[in-house]
Length: 243
Image 1 (cartoon, rainbow, N blue to C red):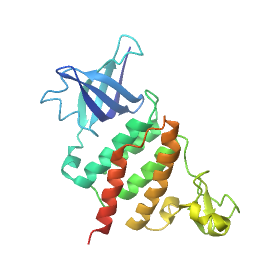
Image 2 (cartoon, rainbow, N blue to C red; image 1 turned 180 degrees about the vertical axis):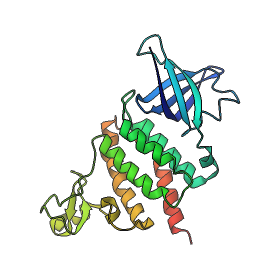
Image 3 (cartoon, rainbow, N blue to C red; image 1 turned 90 degrees about the horizontal axis):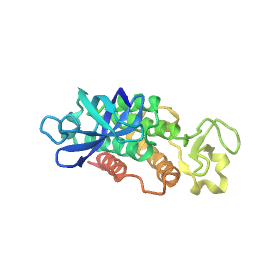
Image 4 (tube, rainbow, N blue to C red; image 1 turned 45 degrees about the vertical axis):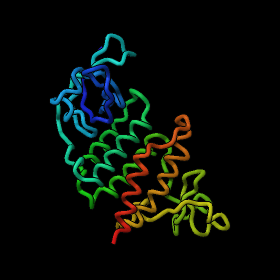
């Protein structure tokens, strides 16, 4: 059994004395793991950093075996390691993908969007909005997409300012009624409207975070979301509130 593909590193963990188990998100093969012989060497360690783009060859005797990878570097994203905010964003992306994606299930559209997002690492003026859009795409890809086109109660397309935590649908101020304090915020940026002020993006993170932690995570065995996501949002909040 063998295939060749390209993908980026999600994580590594040591395996034996000289090898690592490499976990990648591959374009045509999804989240996939394999052993890299000599992965702890000085030559290989910089190549196998999270986010690094690789040319991958995987081989195993049987399809259900963990198999082994042979890798060649395509693009390094190591510049993120020297930028605290970019590193936090990278860690959030790789941790969420490792947490959410089924093993060996292709997600080519999400792969393309994830690669495009990682290419923006270090462009801190663009990253928060791009990351928010990526979280929306992640929810949609996994079946938890938000329907923000019209009010779930009245059918109106005007004055949509809430999201139902139960259905993921938009709710207008009129439709919310006495339930307003139980609904999630719907800043215009979530509907692709207007500019992208950081305050709106931060507010939107609370809404996408709810569906990640309270809808998606319970369906994946009830484990909590990776802490990397909270660390990234907290760092963004502190950057926003800095004098």
